[in-house]
Length: 322
Image (cartoon, rainbow, N blue to C red):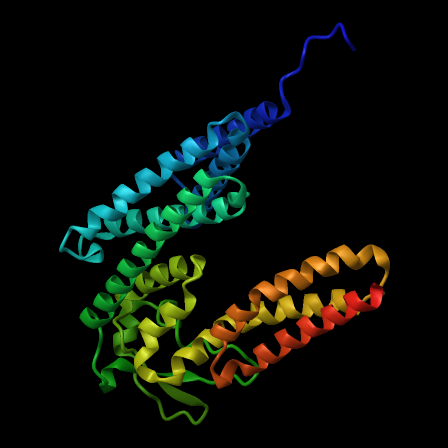
């Protein structure tokens, strides 16, 4: 009605709601008796809410300023180690944890900026480019840290570093790469190969104490879409093993997406589905080169083939509707 006072703009109302949620998350994070998993969830939620705030606040002209301030802070922490000759993981667990959190925060900033219309805003585009450069620098440093850990804590091929593992035929996924962490360290050094016909010998080529460090680095690298590079650093000396491991890690997700695409394309070809299919076609077209690069080895050729078949199938569906 004309006599009513103007209400608060929608984006400001949204900002208040997100700010309230942000305060609750911070209060929960201050609790001392939290498990590591729950604390990590709260940190991720805090970062996500910050990005939502920046996205909403950008309508008021403040969003990019907040993103830039967070990026400046992350850059200072990452650059500090670029001039420090000491390895991060040799400086203690707190330094390593802080660095990983900073890299993770930078990755979230990159993802958030990619979700904005950077093509319409030159300033956003510049900040995104800068954030990606910082993230790339951090990934290179993590590669160095990973190599250092593998060299410093590698173990020789000796009987004491071997243990037996029974083979369960009903299990498809082989957990031998990560089984070390799930067992106590003391048991690792005392495990020996048995003569059990149903078992096989597994070699611990890296000391069990550093397995959690390697996994934490791997998690951040994979979250930052750095999976192939990580596999190359760990298994680069084993030839095709590196590409095979990357294929095993990624194929479940890729095949799930391909199955979803096929399900959409196989449905009834009604006119109202045209826009959705066109969007899917454009997305697939943009990913063709990446898929061909990521799965260029023979082991991943079947994923290439299925991806191209889905691309052609969606194109035919669009033509049939038109």
